[in-house]
Length: 491
Ligand code: SF4
Ligand SMILES: [Zn+2]
View 1 (cartoon, rainbow, N blue to C red):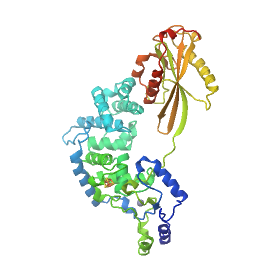
View 2 (cartoon, rainbow, N blue to C red):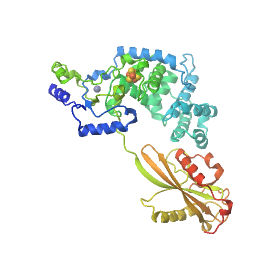
View 3 (cartoon, rainbow, N blue to C red):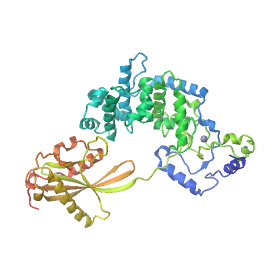
View 4 (cartoon, rainbow, N blue to C red):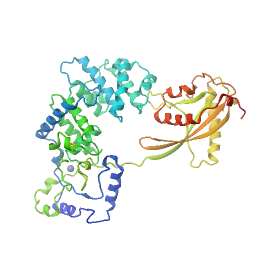
């Protein structure tokens, strides 16, 4: 950075005292930050250039050794504080098969912990290990049973990937989870760089780094890195620091677990407990004043050294907010709004379920019948319902004993709306309860070629329904199925 540029930047530092009208860029930044949960405490209406040397973001050997020693000492006091059954002390004397078993335990726990809190995972993990105590037992399971054990944890694709992964390990690796993180990442479905590092470092003692959300935040603060979170340069710097921390470590799994634990329990997104932090003396963000850059007058005295302050990775920094200014706030995309009809169809005591379309995973979930809602429901909605029914009765009768031609709607009612948030979609289901009659009991009809089946009302919650589908079932159930006398009533 040229000295003239540095001066100009420093002199253009906006602050609320200097200007009550933020620039367009400042406005955008402020909106982005206020949208981001992790940075809710940061007032980003004023930012300042953040002049520092690129070396601020690199761990040298001296700093690494100090950090690692402090991390390990702290971890030895807290490693079993949260009662995680998968967390065990490193045991030098374990045989290779015992290490492979540890790898299975760590793998299952890491997959369950994705998007899910420890306290929720513990009972699921315990049940899972009772039923599938090793890779072989899991590989022989069927997806229905795996999904049933996973029910309530959400993100069912994780369970399917565990099953497929176990089958690959049995088939291609003689039932032994590989100890090479690159092989794990490349060959086993659902294992990325983070999981590969966690599994191999904790179970096999391999010096492989980890970088999950907690470690990303922690290292961003330790290195005072204020750059777009998922930018390639940012990730390269953070992975390099994580790798440096385990280089030549005697117990790399403990170093990684210390990082993960410290990020989760002390260096939290909001209200980081810096006063209790064992590494605060090595943390660049902790030592940073509210206004981090030299003033324009100071710049005059920095001639000849400004080039050394030319980090090109970081963005201007909010002038206030302490350590919560790191990592840089994400730009959150607004969730897309979508509305669908969800038809909960009863016939007597039976409810119609539909197999979720196969999305390339061996995942079986059951749904009700969905259809996109037209933008205006007046008139068009009724017409749509009738059309849908025509389609439905062909489907429902296709593989069973009932005759589609005898089907008729005996009652339909709107049960209300259910809102379900997917990662980037706010989905509203308009729940319509439809009572059908086929002139006879549908009974135990087999699943049709179209993936429809009738299930007794009492058995619906026991089917593998996703969390959102279960929500709308509870709403529809409140409206209630037809009484026996409804069945057979004329259309
Ligand atoms: S001192 Fe504070 S910001 Fe730095 S690592 Fe510790 S808790 Fe995080
Ligand atoms: Zn920087």
